[in-house]
Length: 599
Image (cartoon, rainbow, N blue to C red; front, side):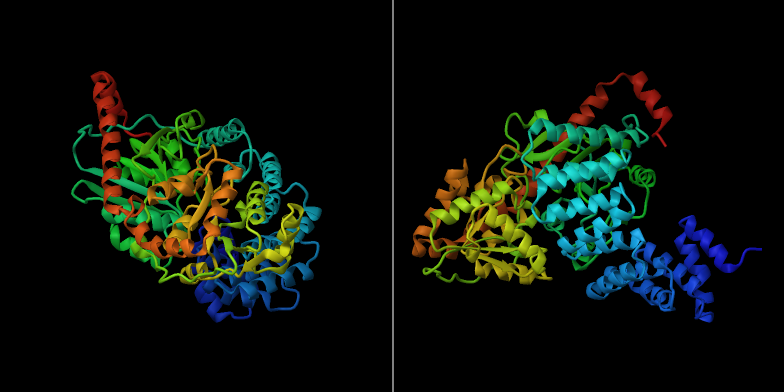
């Protein structure tokens, strides 16, 4: 008969981690010197998303002299995942030193270093892992992510493509290529082709369903489902909150499908708005589709697109009669079954439809609203007449070569001005040096740069805008949250409108906020607009003092009007679906009803 530890090992291999935990806990409590059992229990807890509990048992597994590499590595990962980042990185470095020929130790060290913003060190660990384990797609992907974190997006795209080619059936790896291309200056046709390839791969792994039968009453109350992995302190959560709060419950019954692994106070607030809340992070696509169908959702809205932990693949299964994507991703998904994508006429003007597999629905005004009342406002404004400080708090991934060219033009037009940057990675001296080299190569004077430390809380992040007079948007992947937050803190924003959704969001936001004059049409105008704002310090001070109130009174912050328009859009889409369903032949409807949903 197998021993208890052997039984637990079988359960872990079968990924029945909860059963393994129940079996092991009493045994490990009695047998505190059994390092193998402690490791299995720690591993099972970590796989269930309980890193703080896992640390206790993995520490016991890693303590003995000669502890195996897996124990040392997983102990470090659990420390990191439980918020003890410095300890976790130190433990992973120890594992790599102890087992220098153990490629997974270097790979996991790279993964955690990347998550911590130590991109240069992470790349070195990636290269060690690839030396021991060539053509490993996960490691290539981490290396690519580090390149992106340093703003070297074109090189990142090539490494993501190498990773995807090494494992062509991997949906996530293909998705990384698509996401990175949003910041690259690539032809629209090439970007669209990559997204179509992603969609075909998703569809090939889905159990495609016929359209579901449903009650085709065009005016009945609708069941609307929102699917997202980002319902926490995250831009998606902040922008979707007014919608979840404002949809009229007599017309729309809301269900939320939370695919995220991280939860916080924002999650708790959103839960209170939506009693029908399901945690679905651990479900398979097939299981999630069954849950959504069982809830009889009429309109399913994906909020992630091709981003981390996306579940957009369930739409290829046809989980609901009407399916759309919104907010979280600045491009088409390419996924069959995603019927619509919600945008606006500025982000996606005439002609954009040719590069989307979904039907584009242009919401009136801006495609999103900003709840300025929920932001801590800037009080007053300081005059910085002696020296203008431009700034960008966008993700450094967006600091492309095109962005450097724009910023260089501004600094040359405004002598004596400075540029303040803030983002993940700037806390690390090696990353700052890597960026300084890129800035120097672009001809920028390094003495005019200021790197602001990454701040752990949102309130501290907003407070850092006190160091900035005028915000400069990135290109071709502009800011969304950063643009809104800068305006709410009394900081004007200059943006360049390009040819893609990602490069036109700033134009949409500023137009809705009442400042279309801060939208440039080309590189020269971008520098002129920034220089004009900086030219008159007293006028700039007045603009900054008035900005928060003007923003709050603008259409961008009219949450009630936005939600009513959102409701009308959902109803119009449903009416069209109902009309098409009623137009089908009775025989086909009967056959479909008899067959039922595809399992």
